[in-house]
Image 1 (cartoon, rainbow, N blue to C red):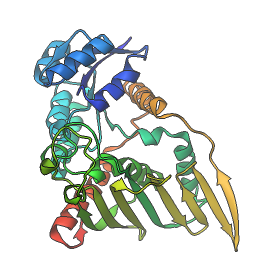
Image 2 (image 1 turned 120 degrees about the horizontal axis):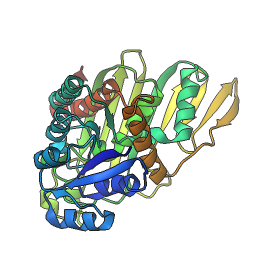
Image 3 (image 1 turned 180 degrees about the horizontal axis):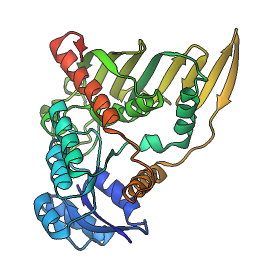
Length: 343
């Protein structure tokens, strides 16, 4: 029997999910929610969705979906996810989770109270090469991990759309919109160590440039988020992590990735592989399993729906989701306060 599904958000991410959901035999996309009528109408026509709504409450009352995908601007994530849980739905929330740790705790409480499943749109966890790397580390083959590094951004390409550049709509800039993907993947591959503290700085270059590259719907005067950030995270297990994000990178072939430093060698994200060390000799070990981005979005839905049907469990746990969110919000708090934030 098909899973009755509703998608909230007719923007870029909402359509990314719809591209995959409409191809799945065990999914019925029963409704689309977005108050921006032109976007809703265009997406409904493209994906042949008959029921469209401007608000979630009316949709939940009429449709009673079993599965809800929250792909709206971040400021609405918490209230919409909580409403969906309260209505008895299982929920996938796009990244970042919400606007604060208080909202994150409220989402978790609503899911537990309703007895429904939760996951997030962290597509990089579906990369089979990354899964092989996670298993390699879990088996202790890289030895004790003492440091890791993650970076992400764009090559002189500020994000498109109506919301990414506005802090009140999106929580922040490059960290929560872009770096969050490799950050989550790396954190998960490392086995989700408990974060202890973070020290960070952020910078906005766009509104200081003489000829800023603007791809979004708006003006440079509206920009209130960082396009560059750097942080140092300490974990309870004694390891550390450096984080760097930049939407206005100079040309590079590696605009996103991570490195893992262990006692027995190094793990890398680009064509996921490990370089083991034997004295001065470097021994490469590659993980060749890979999938395309479209496949990863579909796989995350297939895996979550299987969990809804009682087969397996969600890929993203609340502990992992809240700790990744803690690192990011702590980064912003540290940058604003000008000092290390201890959790």
